[in-house]
Image (cartoon, rainbow, N blue to C red; front, side, top):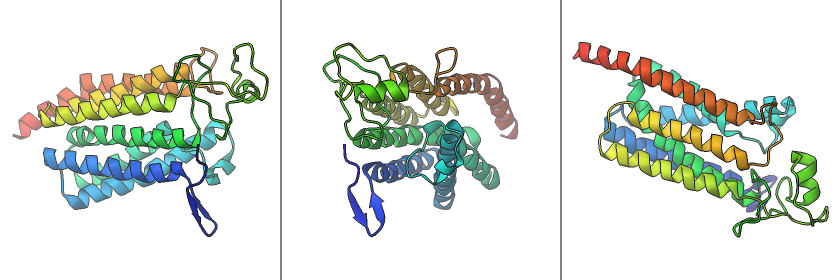
Length: 271
């Protein structure tokens, strides 16, 4: 784990911050490629979408983090940008740009979905480098320890912060191997990105790429949460992120069944 790459005066640059910039840049390049292929808008529109997604994503991620821990002071903390908060904030901001610039909603979603996937994959690399967002204890050969993460993987820290049942034989200060869920998510999101690009190249029907990629991202997050070390599990045993994943999946199915056919009919009538 690397807590700091370098500093410029009082400003410290961490691997997570660097990967966050790489995630936004990679997402923009992918969105630009997809929008150009689908003939959506122009470079000015693409820049507006990027700016909206960046501002909305950062604000949404921080607000979600503060609400999750019921502490508004966390808005000013360097850590704590939660994916689903960023996704919601970025989506609302981008929808506003789409409405203002009269861009096609489904095609814009098709261009945006692989961009979100590659951005998420790169962002999780940053989590891995700083030792954050890891999983439950494991005896698998690829289990990892994070002694210098925000919450180190000692037996005492895992029990105190996450209520994790540590396997017998570990002293309180011993490092416990855990699932590198950051790696799992990077690989899964990277695969979803490749699938989205392939479907764009094959000229999938409007709405297919966006619905499939966003749906798979929600499913991936729902499944990986079973392996995450989390302190926000509800009475059902599910985490807040899993509940949001289920809501997102339901919303995608509903839009696919009802909103997309109406838009297709309206487009056919206009032509």
